[in-house]
Length: 240
Image (cartoon, rainbow, N blue to C red; front, side):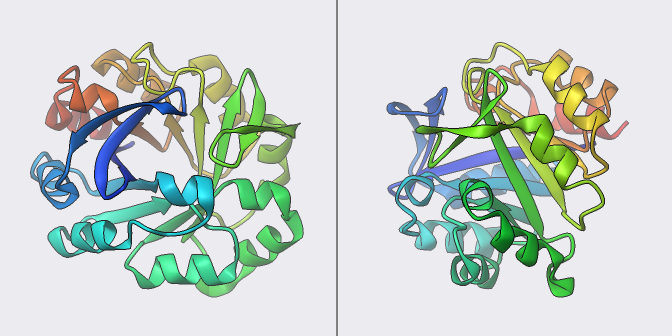
């Protein structure tokens, strides 16, 4: 299992939101590249980056910050936020993203997403972001509910050449209260797409629980920034 430490960008700074609420933000650094270098020094092979401004507005305004991260490290980067059409996805890949996470746009225009995911040159480079609150999907920067359930969508993409499903339980995100292990395990059981869990990781025990249910990866954000998890220890435990 891979650990993907997270960098959430807003106005060029490294921040975390509590339960996806843009009004409850904590700023941790104004140097995203330095944070990325610290991740790699701890052994990270992947970094999970989210452009929070783009997730809400659709406009990529953190390109300079992302470019600085890309120049600073050789680790692979998973980038989400604002991937709403072919042009946006292409621009994100051109910036140097190794994998692009498509969330709200996939649920809004499924035919487009299916076509995108089926492109042979993008095999493994597109991830589906499923963000849920109480089992119901949320879209547009977590501000609006969607009709479909997580499991319905996960079944639909079985056998697709996606790089991953990135599953976030919004109610736990930023709380350090632990992953939603049951919901994540149910998701893993209905699809063959690798599942990366996010939302609530607060301890090494959460990392081990994620590994035990078969997650391909776990995203660590606030727990690292608040000193609750030793990143090198978590990476070693995930890979052991």
